[in-house]
Length: 103
Image 1 (spheres, rainbow, N blue to C red):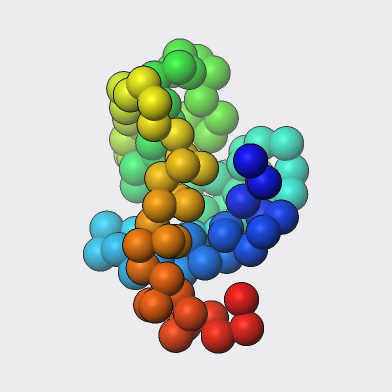
Image 2: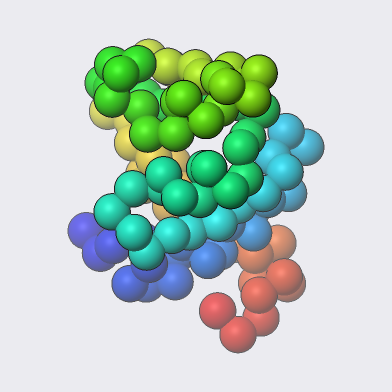
């Protein structure tokens, strides 16, 4: 399977995810971890999969120190972020193409 960024699906999926009412910001980062980005943004809620222990979650201390919440969500077999983003991008292709006509 191609990487999301390699085929432009990431950009298109970001448009769809950004349209969700519960989402304030969608971004990407080039670093190995989002530690620096999290320390700058300090989100109210930081969500990570349950395959990470609380001690392994990058940015946890910044978020909690600011009064935010760190949430570990259960993983579901057969589901992945990449698969979900591809499905969203495909399902809402007309919206994405209208918002990103060159992509």
